[in-house]
Amino acid sequence: METLASDDNLCGEAPTWDAAGRAIFWVDADSALVFRLSLSDNKKRVISRGLPVAGIALNRNGGMIFAGAAGLHLWRGQDDYRTIVSEHDGESLVFNDIIADLKGRIYAGTYYWGESGMEKTGKLYLIDTDGSVRAMDEGIRISNGLGFSPDNRTLYYADSGARCIYAYDVNADTGDLAGRRDFVQVPLNEGIPDGLTVDADGYVWSAQWYGGQVVRYDPEGAVERRIPMPASQVSSVTFGGPDLADLYITSAGQYWPSDLIPPGFNIEAFMGGSLYRIRLDIAGKPEHMADFRLA
Figure 1 (spheres, rainbow, N blue to C red):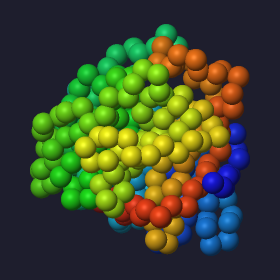
Figure 2: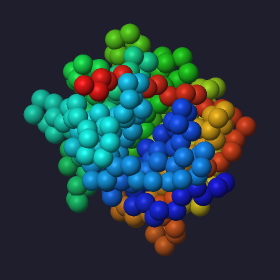
Figure 3: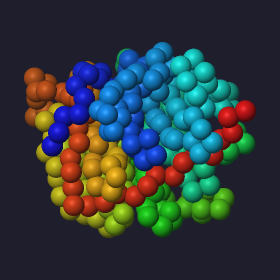
């Protein structure tokens, strides 16, 4: 395990691999920062400041899709972005993780967490490339990681508040979802499921916030392996590298008190804040790119 960056991120999230640029992106959601680390020259820089970002997707036509507390945006550079959507049916959209599908659309989940806990439940939305918005599911406590099976027929979606990773059947043409079921129900004595990714064999990798680990589940939802981490608040994972066999893992340094803390959780332990990389003998798969027009 390597520590690639030690920036004391309050809430490191959204690791995103750019194969063309040989770079890894990630965010500090609580500090409104987006980082880029080039693997060619090992240079790291902040590419965006001030815009709330919790989720990232690369865009086919240039730029990137950023999602966060102010909605979904097509981003081209510092202070150069176009907001695609920020509200729906009179509700402000506070987005967390996002993922692009085969058609370049974006699935994005909302969450509404305040100082006193959950203010209301969120929803899972599908944002089409023309900017139209559809609610696909509701009653989500804390929207988190999203990932597709290798055949794009299954979408996995973590609700941290329910301690559950759901699975949906996907109509790849229309984007419709059906048949929601519990793929994994995480026990009360473990952390909560946060960001996730899916490898080339269809196994789901889940970062466990409060759990200090990354868990790999087989396609039936059984635990295949656990990778202990030096951080307690492990937030998200993605595959990258030239052969997609590097696992990039974000973590969060600011302790997040909630009623979801498992028994015996050590609040004196190292919470996190660094970006890690682990070399594996297992390959990931390329993520889809969004397809929104710059103009």
